[in-house]
Length: 417
Image (cartoon, rainbow, N blue to C red; front, side):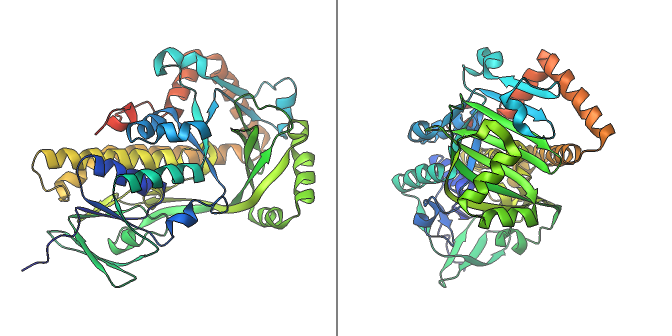
């Protein structure tokens, strides 16, 4: 006689994607448990990862539907304009823009998205805090700090053994614990991908002048450099360098870092004062060969780790969470075995193409812009100038970046599951 299930769904990873999925699944009546090797309190500290996220306006609707939107709103900085420049140095933003630039303005699509901005910049720790409070308020069980040591599945369910010796049993196990996913490995799902030989240096600075809600993205020969607006006249800098240079920047003194910043990026950042620690993240592409296996589903970075060039990594993961929750809840309402291969295949078909297409697009974008070959530069600059002059195409780019295209899960339309 088999041991009865302890939960409906066991979620490995209580980060932003895992916690969001837990809230959505619980909203639909599923009994879930979050398992994470990090104490919840550690994830809320400013020193945990230092990153900020460009939250697409459709994703922010999802936060609203899950009850965390109003908590996040005071910490969310509107991005009403995005200026993309291709040049040897990003000082162009302080002068007359070069012909090779793109400008996106939220007002152009305001009649279609309810006058939302192009997106919201929110510090990750703020998102984690809001999700943690919502998880606690919903009474969702959290096992932390505890890690998943093994996963076994059969035709009926999944058995998950934890590092503290406890054993959990459920109809489904979800891998949401990032690129080194134990759940993915246990399911025998391989990955494809490669490194870029680059690292992203992430730093928060207090600006010497108002940012006006404008996000700047500069494509330099060494890689993209982004200045992303935050609340309180601050900005998140995401600076791509070779890994060797990035490590040197991480350990440099504030004075040396600031001097290098001014020398490289000109007067636009004049007066900027670094705040909080700096962080360095190696950049690579990693795509799971499948999104599902028997009694197993993957979402977030466990399914796809992409270059941060367009700031869409978390948005992709949260769309996974919304789609998987919707598929499972509908299956329950129909009286189906929600952990079965037939049900999980609906999730895989929904998300597979979108994830692969976006990952390939970001990879191509990085390769196109991270070089200074004259013929390539000419071609891309002509392309940027053309897009900037074709209103319908420019608006299509903005709707795609806002996450409001394609077959959207209900949560991304602002509706409860």
